Amino acid sequence: MDICDLLEEIAGTYEQQLGTGGGVYAQDLLRQVSSLVEQAIPASCRAQGYGGKGSAALTPWIGVFDPDITEDPKEGLYLAYIFAADLKSVTLTLQQGVTKLASKYGDGEKLRDYLGTRGKELFHRLPTELVTDWEGSPSFNTAADRPRAYEAGSVVARRYEISALPAEGVLRNDLWHAVEILRAAAGVEQSVSVDPAPEGFVAGYVPEKHIEPGGLEGFQPKDGSDYIARIAERTIIKSRSHEVLVEQFGNYAEGRGFVPITKKQHPKDLILRRDGVEWLVEAKTIKRNNPTSAVREAVGQLLEYSHFLYEQPTRPHLLALFTEDIKVFAPYLEELKIASIWRTPEGWAGSSSAVAWGLVD
Picture 1 (cartoon, rainbow, N blue to C red):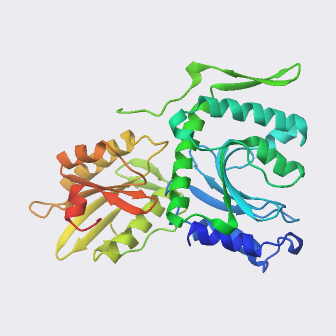
Picture 2 (cartoon, rainbow, N blue to C red):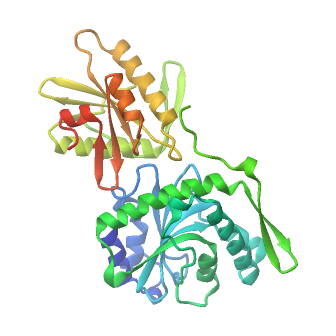
Picture 3 (cartoon, one colour):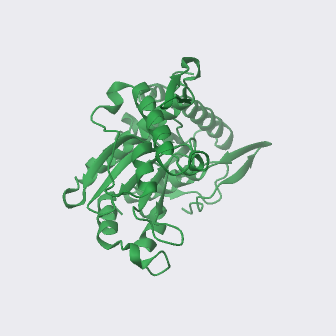
């Protein structure tokens, strides 16, 4: 389901007075968000809808989480599409978790002062070019405590009028850009301190704690839940995002005339076949915009599996698959005779070999 369609559908059908029970259409839609928008968000992220517990929320919202940062909206940093109380607008916002802070500062002005002070410092420490044209103070058109805390807790925000939502491509590009902001903010987060002051709170900055992203340093997909794979006395934890990536790409490759196979291929992630030719695919999740480790692991495993699991002259073409753009590493992999493909907001992109094989345009 497109992000645009989902936002319109929720805004057009949500009724707070109907509660949160099963059979309430908008609430059921929010509960299904994870599977509905899986194709529209980065494979390394999770989406989840929130319409309230017990009583329905005044401002329903959809959270987008990077598991390397947090999957719990009670704390940490995450993205959210938060609907205004009148459902006439929705705001994509980088949020600070509110619930655990509320247990310390209450639900009122003190909490909002803390969140606002911290949010402004986080924004100030982000690269200017990353947050240009992103506002930090949304409005959800209500005086209720929790939505006002969301307003104060926003680090950056972009508001959309439901009656004039931008095209799907614009929404996806905004979301993928917001994921970059989220990851940058997570690197800044540990360096920001907030302390009580005579008139509220004051923010501080500890540069040595600032974490910059590192630089050079038969098709039957699994169900997506985390699991443990054992390969030659090594234990590797494979995340849900890894399996989502394999599933999404397998379905995509099948649509382009390739036969994707995962069944009985362990320890290989995936193989593709077409016209008697085989491609060995290794899938990697990129964490915090740093492809270095993912590329190294892909190279090692592709070369190892090709050497030990195949015999000359039947060795396959090698393909490294990633959750996002690997940038300068694509030509490096080409030199090693390894093609690369990665997810984009529009679908898939890849290196010159991937284009030549017809895997991407």
